[in-house]
Length: 300
Image (cartoon, rainbow, N blue to C red; front, side):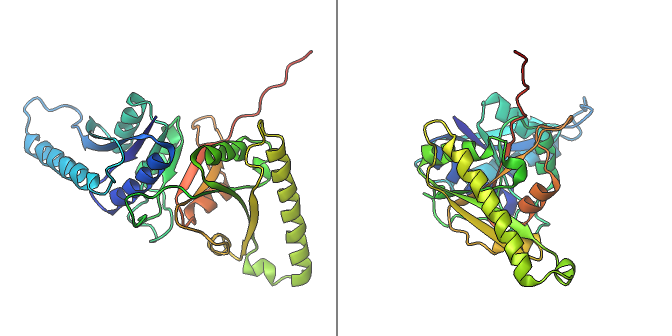
């Protein structure tokens, strides 16, 4: 079992290293620290770009050496500098070659500090990946070299009722000894809140909605083979924006947020509008699992 950490010689790389190390340590995976060195296209037979490529390779080796110092001695680590036409294709090549179970990435350097921000590399990998992808908030740091996942929080909505997201997260939590929590988010913009619905009535509606989702969660876990994760907390984050709703609930160190994605005609990872907003406002690392496609029914 292998965790591939996509490395860049800047702040994003550090966040990915912290996240990937925590994941690998929790699941007893080996680690592949991978950085990509761009190759010229079309190839230049005169090697006029040799000095530039040598500089890029040196920078990659320095980034790998620095990242290695941020990983505890308890993990088995392989350093890989992979030539490719693009960072995204190169990281996917490494992940497939090593049969990785997950790819850990950092956030865009232009995003807000402390939340997940999808950069161009992450977007392209999500459109092409066939394994789970994890994203670290910008500036993410576990603060220790022996961090492990302490809790998996599942972002749960009606679309997840018939998926395997919750059961998958429950099995993973049980395997790695982490606790399980389910979070539902109720977002009501201020313009809507200023309407004719009384706050007390609105609170009642949200409460009924949350009760229904909690019943769905209990039912799904009860039907799990072997009674996976029979104990789970259900919380509701409320706010006028998605950022407020996500920060409305407490988050702890060593926590990851599991978000389900859908398959589309062009991508195995497709973030719906709600899932995208949850991911882009998450203050903790996000673990993206593709939702299983509904099983076709067969005639008798």
